[in-house]
Image (tube, rainbow, N blue to C red):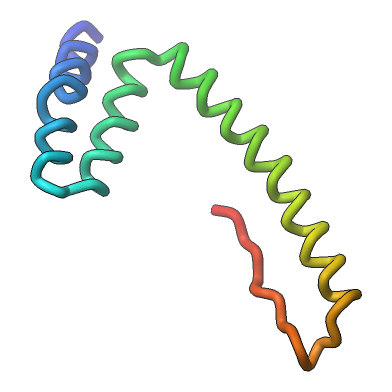
Length: 86
């Protein structure tokens, strides 16, 4: 467990910033997320939970907007995109 945390901290401090400097933003994000999960497991779970709660709230708002605009605009004028969460 100590080795995982050590490698995760090193990744957060060295490799993720290096990936950012090289313009590898997707890799930087993946390194940060995976490293954060091992370096700070309690905080990671809290952030993960809060993001899920916010996503659910936003999904409800998006679905309400789609429903409302389908009433306001005729179907032939406007076709809403399918909203799917991952």
